[in-house]
Each structure stands twice: as C-alpha cells, then as structure tokens.
Length: 379
Ligand SMILES: [Zn+2]
Image 1: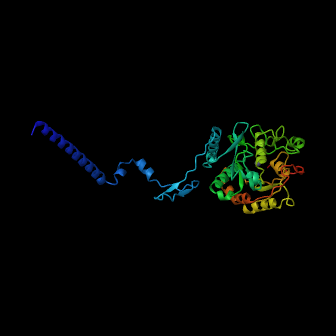
Image 2: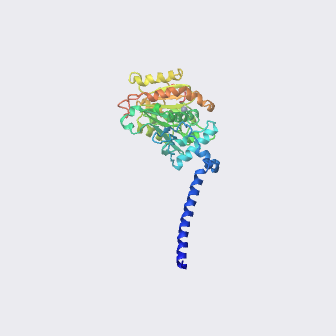
Image 3: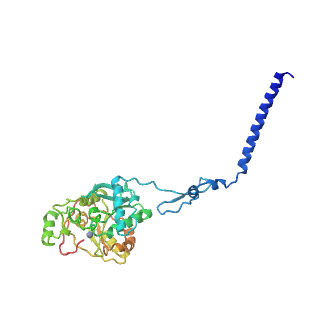
C-alpha cells in the first residue's frame, strides 16, 4: 500500500466517523428531549408568569364572557370592552367627580367608563356632559321613545347627583332596561355649584339655573317677582336676562336636540313628584305615568306645584307640552343615597319603557298658562 492510498483510506474513515458521530449526537439530543420531565417548564417559570397563565377569567359584571366554540380547547375568554378614550378635559372632569365621590363616601363613580358628550363648559370651565343609552340614530325616527334625565341643576342638592350616577351604572349593566328606547342623562348640569367645598344652589355667577329659561313671561315677571316676592333672595336670582347662563343653554340645546317625549329632573328635598305639561284631558299617558311612578315608589307623594318664570317646568312642560316630572328626593343627606335610588329604581325603569306620544306642536310654543305664583316652595 502506497502512502497516498493510506491517506485516502484515512480520509474516507474520517468522513464515516464524522457522520456516525453526528448521528449519534442527534440521537442523544432527541432522547434527552423525550426524557425531560414534563413539569420542568413549571419549575422554571417565574411566579408571575405562572399566575398569569393559570389565571381564570373572573366574571366581571360589565365584561360579558364569551365561549369560543371554534377552539379545540374550549377556553372561557373574558371579552374586555375597549378602553374609552377621553379628551384631557373629560378625563380631568372624571377625576374631579371621583374626588367629590370620595368626599361624600360614595365609592367610585365609574365616570371614566362612560362615553361622554361634551360641547359646553360652565363659567369656571367645568365640562357640562351628557351620556346616551340606546341608538342615537333612532332620535330622528322615534323621538317618542326618548327619556331625558337631568340631575345636579342645583349643586347643593347633592343626592340627585349620586342618583344619576347610580342610574348610569345600573343601566350600563342592564341594557335590557333601555331596550330600543333612548335615555339621555346629564348627571351634573351645574358643575360649578357642586364642585366646591360648600356646594351652592346658584351657579358660579350667582344665578339659579332653574329660573333662567327663556319663558314667555320672563322679561315681564322674573326680576319683579324676585325683588318683591322673594326680597331679592340671592339663592333665587334669575339672572339679568333669560338664557344668560351656560347651564340654561345646555339644557335648552339638549331638549331641542333630542326632543324627548318626557323629562325627569331630579332635585331635593321636598319628597314629592311634581308634574308640568299637558293635563290629563290632553295627554292621558303622561298623567298615567305620573301615578304609576308614584305607585312604584311606594305611593310617593304627588303634588302639583306651580311653575315659575324661567323654570324648566314652565319652559319645557307648560310652553312646549313636553311632560316634565320633577322628582324631589327626601333630602340632601349624602349617606342616604343608596336608599333613594332603590326607592325610585323601578319607577325610573318603568318611565324609560313608556312610549309617550308627542304633541305635534311640541316645537311650537303652546298657548301656555301663566306662571302661578301662589306658593313659596322652591323647586
Ligand atoms: Zn332644586
């Protein structure tokens, strides 16, 4: 055997040896994978990852749970609604609402969970917002199904503000109550009056937002009545002229926009439901609803109070024939709010579900009755 033949044989052997070694190494590595303990991944996983991967979606009231049947492993997946994006102004507003909820020990408002409509600010720059439940496109085709609920018109009547937030959170969790109706809720109509250490009836400019509506009798009577009958009581100041205030603009525009078939304005502390609007000969449904709401709230007292120059009841109920209910809660004791909402919950559900026929002349100002001035009670 020559030296070159010897070298060729050695090279051939090396190649075979290399292939053999490679195959051997591959076999060993495969066998190692097989024999690796199944739970090894658990042992190496950090506690956080482990707890995340093993977490079971908890039923969250506002997060409906869906079962994806296509998946082989039938996993229960919590469907988390997309986070609502707020403008900086609305985000700051919600923080402020929560701050005041904390002050009154009301827990969380969940203000940030609602899609707020924000067009107008108060004199001190607080957003005056509203939220809509239901399909807003229906407004044009079925305004008779629209209920408007206003709270916080007088900022020192604080229980109605919590009432509106209780209602907002309740309706959010129970879409079946709204159904195919539309519910428009403005929880704090006069934020400047509520967002202060001592809340006030009047707004930042010292005007009573429920005396500033542009009723037909405003120019003739509002200031005269205030001076002579109410001895220029600052709490009842109607303003220098009608519609001088942002809170009034807000309510007038909201009513003109949605043309509700009924309005419920929540106040305190007179413990009654007052009704302004077409009487029973003109609108039986509206009057029936008044009695039904009272019945559902444990025979809550009905009292037909007079309306005033510049009041919502006069402008919307009397002059525009929109059934307007003023719900006066028993008091402004912030520790009783839960009880108040519970008392009226079914009455409000019922009102939302009632389709009231609209007066075809609603947009025209009716031949309104004159403001009656025979009572001192302040709504
Ligand atoms: Zn009031």
